[in-house]
Amino acid sequence: MSNGVKGALADCILEVFNNAQEHSESEAGVFVCGHVGKAGQRSMKVTIADAGIGFRRKIEKAIDKKMLSGQAIAWGMKEGNTVRQGNPGGLGLTILKEFIRKNDGRLIVVSDRGSWELSSDRERCLEYETSFPGTLVTIIVNTEDPKAYRLVSEATHQTQGD
Image (cartoon, rainbow, N blue to C red; front, top):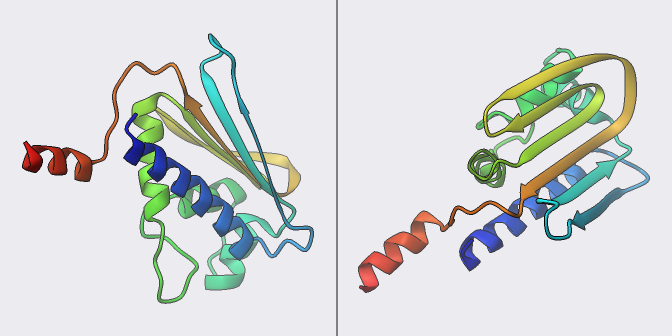
């Protein structure tokens, strides 16, 4: 992948972290861990966790919209949906989702009694009987993906420079 894509991916991960800080209302804070697999293990994994109020309660509190936990996560993952007043944001999430689909990676969110998962071939939402305190966001990048990636702006710049 190009340096531009690497930078954009890092920015997307930072946006997920910043969203956790801004929206979780976690008194314990936000935690991040990661792992890059050895050759043949195919992946880089980053997990961002908080012990906050979760998607469902944040959406209900901010915009008075009631839904099940998995549905709340799915709602929060749709472009244009936000609990921010006057600032839609979310561009990093859109870029991250597009990259995950093309890269054959995965994006997994668990919050309260639900989960949402995106992969190259599907998006699914589940509801559970037991509750998870807070939210976990796991980003899995396929590091052995043979495809080349570059941003549209890089392709345009290269074409204009030739």
